[in-house]
Length: 304
Image (cartoon, rainbow, N blue to C red; front, side, top):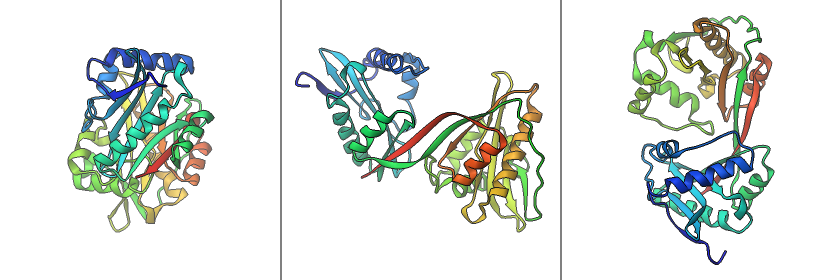
């Protein structure tokens, strides 16, 4: 590795080389993905991400053979994404890039650094263990086939749902997000009302379901996306405040969301859902309703 050079990413001049590196990586490891300069430009333009300070590369003879991307997702957490060219694995390049990412995360003031890897990629899991990262939680990308029949459900006397369109209170919506997901891995924590307001450009007010208890206190939420034009039908994994969590309540809010989504769709269709850090009994619920797994990712964390 004597001739390998390490330096900060040069944005946007390094974009073509980064595209070549990633596409070679995807092709070699049979990952069904192709990128281009515009996609990488968008990725490196995330809020609060600084392309020329938060990316580090390895080069050999002016060829980019390694890249790591660090993003401070919250005040406490930074995340990284690493690619080393298949011809240059097991040369210590990934280790050097991760060392830089750890130091960069410390500079950002984060408390920990996270990454994710497919559960089937045992080599990548072993690599993260060697770098000092430890298993944290599970991410699941799932799909509910159109052929699955949904059971009916019934709310207990202790809970009820209103849409955001009915409530129209960004403070309650923010409380619902923070109270439901703050303690679950993979979710942003202590998000602001301004940040939550941005989601209203993605989720329609009538497609956000706020869950209340018998005392009219906010205790959870669910969301759906019904994009008929682009044939995109998504249900959010429901969120419930810790003191109210139960398998039956998760089941009710999820079934409520699924029934509304199917009613909004103009024709029968598959529904997708992502799950971050959910508990075993919640995941068991997904299976029992007929969801199938498309992708299973493990989250890892380095404590700074």
